[in-house]
Image 1: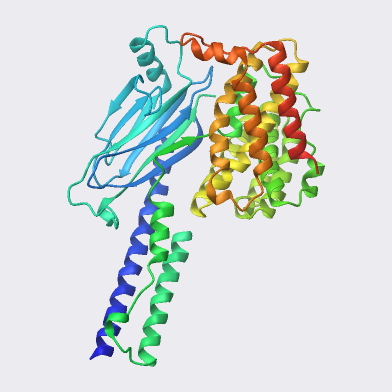
Image 2: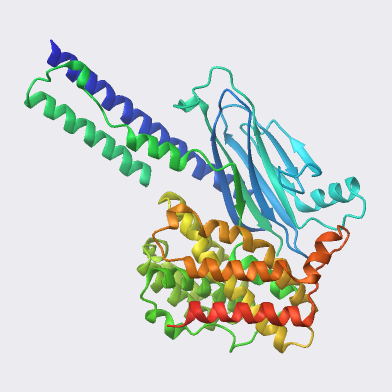
Length: 174
Length: 292
């Protein structure tokens, strides 16, 4: 009896681990496809790189931040893909990082889950100039992903339905 | 790729345990059955929880493009010597010079010097083989396409973007992103060197000078990337030390302090003596990186 139970327990764990690994592999493969979709939205801007931000929805609110440089005489396009989001998040773009109390919110949007959205640096620069006197141009921006609290989430051992990723692909005008 | 290997590993581990239990002794107590979940924990930690603060560094092609738009002229003597590529036998030097040659290739291609650029592509391919990234360049089609488009600047630039994208994907799939800061440190140093070279030899230098100071903004994140604990096996201390010295010297310039105190200031222009000091530090570091 003990041997049978042991065998069943091990078999169950093997199946569980194999399923977990398989789900994660699929998750990763989907991201590669979605990155290609986001890249297509950059055209005719030149691809410069991508940043995939992974997170797990937890019982508390989280913010993940990505810093991006904007150089002189260059226009940028940022393509966000939210097709690996199990729930929606909010995207906020600021002129300074999250430790700065006086930072300016340049744009904010949600409804990115399952969608692709493009933002251009020219729009961010216009918002910057309109919101801040004496402002000239943005030299960098900080993209904040605000991940809402999810009641009942498994904080330490997240399930697949709590895993999320937001893809950001960046391009510049040649 | 890593995930697939891990999946196979987990299944193999499980099957191994299963077979052992079938043919071996009966466990004395069912409660003692334990399965090591360390691998799964590491997988979660490594791949599916990004840091709370992250950054994107510009590609060598974008940096070269910005410098060119700022008025940087092509100087054939300024690039690094490709014949030194095979002399770099330490892994750190190989990774740094992978970045140096990437910046040189971008510089050549954007200045319509594709034949020169091809030499750097060969050097990069050779170094990639030494640092475990041969898969990025193993497609011979890359070189054939480069050769077929030597006269077509746009096609060569698209090919360079493709190489950059392949490198980025390869590093992500193989959990090597932390080493990209080392490549980037080499590329940044070379980009700055090419700018300094032009600044010292080009009369119309204001645009390049402004661009050099603008590129200094990236340095903090390069240093942060180099300090990633996963890079601790690489003897990076001298690179970090030199880059930190460049950063603190720059931060101490009067012009820099005045610029950051004036929120309406658009461009930072260094005094001649400040440029001289910054240029000297850049040249010293570049020499240490590129010497064979």
